[in-house]
Every structure is written in C-alpha cells, then in structure tokens.
Image 1: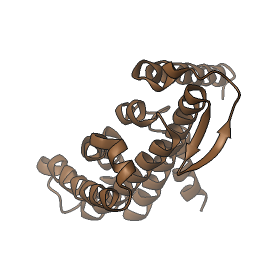
Image 2: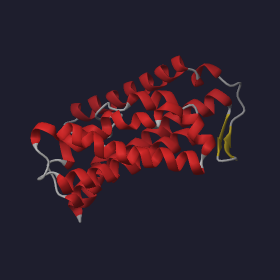
Image 3: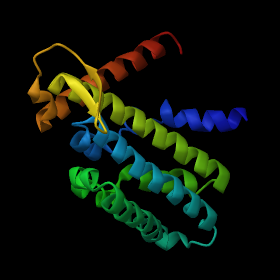
Image 4: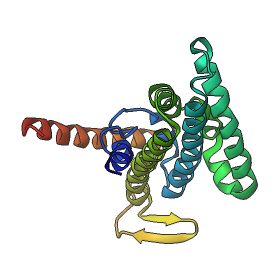
Length: 204
C-alpha cells in the first residue's frame, strides 16, 4: 500500500507535470482565466490520461516499438474524442470557453509523456495509479494558477454559478490577460525553484 501511495503522491509533488516536469504549459496559460475553466480542463485531461495509461499499459507487449508513438496517439485521440463530444453535449458553455484546447489534449505532452515514460514500461494497476497522481498534480497546478488570476484579476472567484470568494480590492485586469498568465507562472516557478534550492541546501 505504501508503494501505491508513493506512486500517487509523486504526481502531485516531485513529478508534478507543471512544477516538477514543466510540461503542459500551453493549456495552463490559456485556460486559467477562471477556476471553472481550470477544473474543466483538468477533468478532461484526467479522463484521457487515466484511460490512455490503462490501454497503453495493457497493450504494451503487443505494440511494435517502431510504431508505438502513432499507436499511443490513436489511443489518446479516441478518448479525447469522447471528452470533446461529452463536453459539447452536457457542458456547452465550458466547451465553448475551452475551445481548441479540448482537441489539443491529443498532443498534450503530459499525456504522451506518461504513455511513453511510464505506462509503456509498467503494469496496468500502477499505470492507472500514475494517471490519477499526475492528473491530480495537474489539477492542483491549474487551481493555484486560476485562483490567483481570477481572484486578483476580477476581485472574486465564481465557479458554476456560485461566488466562492470575494476580496475588497481594485481588480488587476492585467492578470487575466495573456501577459498576466506568463507573469503569474513565472512568479510561481520562481517560488517553487527557491523552495527546491532551500531543500537541497539543507540536504533534503
């Protein structure tokens, strides 16, 4: 059980796709204008990641090495199509808001990277655990980024029609613009790297 927890937590901490592996920055920068968008993006990516890991792991011994990447992309594209159709049918507002970044999950380097680096080399059980861990790490990163941008950019966080938090400030609208996304991720990366350097200096 300790190994299962370790594999799961690795995706949130050490191998966090954003702050650890520095992958998947395009959707992070593009959709985190609101927490609601961040949750939608994370949910879609999680579905694709978990099922892609499952199928890649289950079929890894039957997939010739010379064509493994095209096969991985076909598997991933299948689940992206499912996400695309379900979101369009049941959450049309979010589907419109996320736009092209839903079909672009097909080439999201987080998902392709986990298929190649982990699911292609490990059994189904641990590949699914890895999928859950990485997906949770991606969700955490999206929520941190989106919360900062929406809260300070608009003065409140509104999710699925409910106002979760309001602060009495003049909104900094710059933060919900594309340059604001780069500024926010830059500050978060600097803080993360500073914490890592302190741990290394202490021998942690």
